Length: 50
Image 1 (cartoon, rainbow, N blue to C red):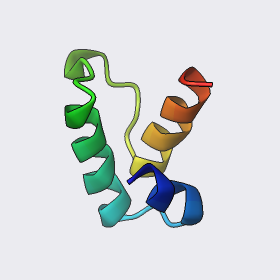
Image 2: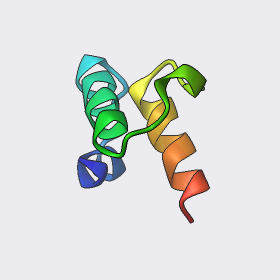
Image 3: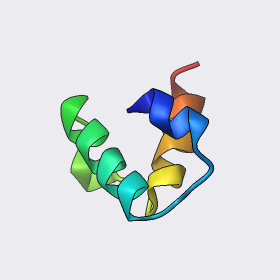
Image 4: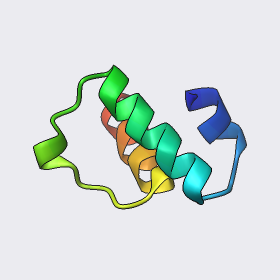
């Protein structure tokens, strides 16, 4: 899914659902979510994991 984010410039429902799935897979604390769109989640994730 990260590759799909990397290769896409879209920020719609598909990206939002992928962000939710990724967040659950990596067991993020949902109470501290600081994103409202899939693209925002991806950007935050890639910045914090460099």
